[in-house]
Length: 525
Image 1 (tube, rainbow, N blue to C red):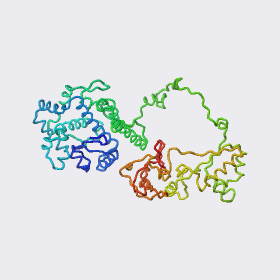
Image 2 (image 1 turned 60 degrees about the horizontal axis):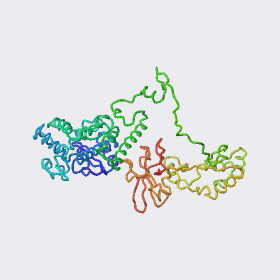
Image 3 (image 1 turned 30 degrees about the vertical axis):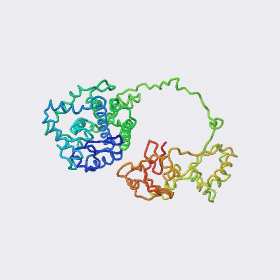
Image 4 (image 1 turned 120 degrees about the vertical axis):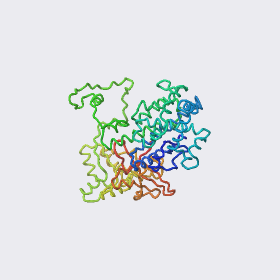
């Protein structure tokens, strides 16, 4: 199985109940995920059928399964190409060949390979055949070993229906068969790990023993213990790290939504209610934290080594910046106020009366901060008005382009104001928005590759059938439909190239501390 795919073994009954598409299955009974979006689709499908599923969990389970296959394959190439054949011989001798063959057939019935599902082969014919030059009995034993471990993994308990082996336990000598495997692998070459030399079976089981209730913890252990088995392939390491990141990010989102304080990735959360750990709180804060009966502890400043000392490095503005007296003005609001005050339309920067600048000078103002000078997104204004604010203008931080807004008079009007203000010793300041643009910006139209994006929507149930928010004829942009009916926050918007009709999904701006800004597009630094 290539590194571009994820595998997840699923039994026949779960496949039928959850209506999992046959096209997802490989030639064995593994479900194949081409990407995380496929895991999202499967999680949604399983959840809709009554088994609550998190896409990050489905992704992690598939990743663990795939990495185990790779670890076994690497072991075979490095130590014993016939290790599974030898394991079958060991089981035949100690459990009985007839019982071993019966368990293999029942396994193929419960977890049918694709040729069996399609009716091309019977279970017995499949067992007597080969796949890619490997006898299928060895293929089935490898899958059976991973199913055994999965059913004995507490972190996978919420999803056990997908790979449940109860029937095998009931109708075959599957249990004694699998319990004889560790002794066989003890006689095989060992694997070097940070925890010493382990048999292949012990190494496969080590993540479960070390972190029984946490998929995140198991992926961390795999990264450490299976290093010698997995090698140093960059693609493989990236897959593992991405799996960890997905679990953590989804965990943060869930905690933020519930308003709970708990450990992200804590496998005990499902079994235990959130609790306040006063000892942990005191240790982390250095105080009693208001816990009855506890006493305050000392709180010391960190000891910063001399290596971190840096001499002062003053910038060129030190002659004036420390003494600046600045006033902020929202450009459009200020112009509206001046229009009412002077009884005439003042809409451009070069129309600001001299008297107003004289007043600022008398007040001792030496810096005028003008908020919202840049050309703003028309989509931003449309969104605000569509959501019930008919008088709204576009956000000052959702920019169409870094040019002075045309309705403020453009560059020429700003130059005029700057010259008149400077005669009074007043400098001008403005905002800069470095991490995002408006969702209909010039950059979104001309350089979509500069933004965080995906070829698929962030969630399978997101649809984009609302109005086109772009005023640029080169592109169309659409918000998630559920934003308009208040069912969710917009996470990404759909960008369509008007010429090619190619669609992509650009993520909204977000500083990491709250919900996305629905009228922006996040730049990919």
